[in-house]
Length: 485
Length: 149
Image (cartoon, rainbow over all chains, first blue to last red):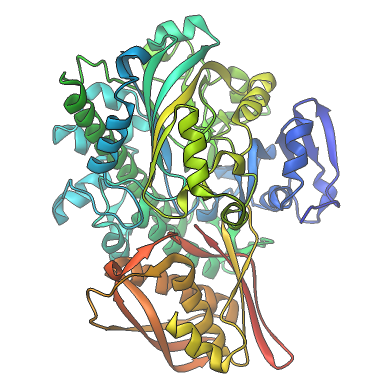
C-alpha cells in the first residue's frame, strides 16, 4: 500500500515537504512533521496522498499540514491540519472535522500519590467500569429532557456545571470554556437528536477510554509548578466525543456539501473532502450544527468527569475537592474553528480544521486561561494503554507554523483486522497486568484492536513535536488502570 | 449467520474485509445492483454485531427510500441511512427486501430486531466516500467502501 510516487523534500530532521507540483490542482505544498523512523510507517499507508488531496481545498493557506501521528483516514488524513482564508473564498469541510465532532480529551489531577492508590487500583477500575456507562450504544444514567437537550447544545459544559456536575473552574480550564459560541439547534436534524438522545453521560467505543495514570517524568519544572503537577502524582484522563449525535451531523452536512460541489464549482479529488465556502448558507448551517455537537461533547466529558469524581469519593471516602481532583485542561481534537492568525505578516480570519490534531496556542494568547497564560495552552496527548501519555504546552512557533496546532496522540500503525488476527486478548491482559496495568474493556474486540503494538510509540511522536518546536513537553504519565469503551 | 447463508445461495459471497489503518473497508459483489445493495447492508450487521440468544423476537420493518445523482452517491446514502436508522431506532437489520432499485433510486424495507439481541463488537459511525468504487464489471456489480469505525 505504499505510495512510492510521493517524493518528500527534507527541510530539516523533523520537517518534510510534498511539492505543489505532485498533483495538478494542489494549491499549496504539503508539510509533514516527522522523523525518518516515523516516515517509514507513514509511507506504509495512503496518508501522504491524503495530505496532497487536502491541498486542493479552495482558500487553503500556507500548507496542507500533517502532524507526526498522521495516518490514513478518509478525506483528510488523521493528524491533518488545514486553514482556509475566509475572505479569499476559503471553505469548510465536514470531512475535515470527521464524524466524531469534538472527540477530545480531558486531564484531571489528584493530590494522591502512587502509595495512596497502589492497593486500590483494581477496585477503582472495576468501580469506574461499573459506574460509568461505556461501550457501543450504551445509555447514560444522567438523563435529560427534550428541552434540556437543546440547552446542552447551546451551553455545553456550562449546562452540566449548572446542574451541579462540576464547578466554574472546570469551565475556565476547557477549550472555548466548554461552550463554543454560534451553536444553532435549528440546524440540527431530527435524526441527530434521535441518535444522540440516549447517549449523554457515556463513553464511546473503540479508542475512547478513561485512564488512571501516574506522572513518571517531568520535563519542565516551571510549567509543572504552574499546573500544580509533581512526580508520582495520580492523574485521570478521559477521552470521548459527541457520539451518534455528532456522526449524524457530519453525515447530514457531508451529503449536503457533496450535492453543492457543482453549485460552487469546487473540484475535490475525494468526495469525502466535499465542502462549501465559509461564507455560504450551507457552511453557516454546518457551523451552527457542528458547534452544537461540540457543546454536546463538552457537556458529555463534564458529566463523565463528575461520575469519575463520585467514584473516587466512594473509594477513598473523601470529597473530590479534598482529593484535589481539579481539571487541568480539556480540548478537542476533531473540530473546525474560526480563528485569527498571521499569514505572511497579515492578520487573517481563517477556518482552521483540526482532524486528529490539537490546538496548541502559545504563551500570552487570550484564549488561554489566565492562570496558564504565561506558559502556553496545556496540550494533552494520550498514548496507547501500555506505554505513556504526555502533557505538553503550546508554543509561539506553533502559532507561526501550524496555526497553533500540534499532534493529538500516538497514531495508528496497524489495522484493526490485522490486530484481531495476531493479538490474543487474554495474553495481552496478562502482559499488561504484569506491567501493573489493570484493563477492563466492554467490547470483545476492543482489547486487541487497541493493543499497544497497533500504535506508534507516542514517545517518538512527542519527541518530533518537541524538537520541531510545535509543542513543548511538560510531563509524562504511565497508565495504572484503563477502562475501554 | 442465517441471512448470509440465504444470500450465499444466490451470490458468491456477501463481503470481504479490506485492510485500512484506522477504519474498516469492505468489498462486495453481486450479479445485480439489488444484490450489491443487500450484501453491503448486511455486511454492516456482520461487522458490527454478533447474535446472542434472542430475547426480543419482534421483527421491525423500516422503509428506506433514497435518491441521489448517481450510483456512488446512492450507495453511500443507502448505507448511511441504514446506519442512522439502526442507531436511532436501536435495531440490527437482519434482512433487506428491495422493492425497486436503479442507479439513482432505491426503495426497500429493512427488517430488524432489537439491538439488545446482539453483542455489538464494532460501532460503525458512517460509510465514507474515500476510495469508494461502485461499478459494473462484466456480469457483476462490485463495490468497495470504507466505514469510519
